[in-house]
Image (cartoon, rainbow, N blue to C red; front, side):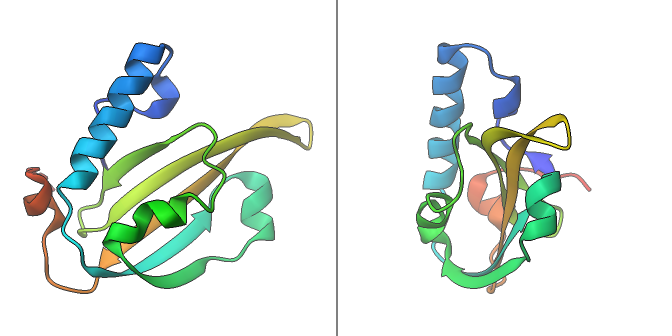
Length: 129
């Protein structure tokens, strides 16, 4: 997977960097075409991974935020692109303690376009495999 932000939201320590991250996300996502996608939602943190099954949906790409808005997005998200032309949102939620360890709710939301559209081309990104 290729991080499309200049750095992960988890590596940001200042309000200025937070605002830059949001601007990068907005600029990237504004370039996306609308297309129907197969979408998977997977919790990847320890507790939620064992409690929730993968959700599979069909959704238009332009509706990404309505889906993200249903998740715990307290600490923001990163935007990634896979070599297989999938747009991935790595979502970071609130913290919790589980079995004596501090964890954070983490969710992967993967948009896989049904059409043959190249998201890398649409985003103006050269992905080297």
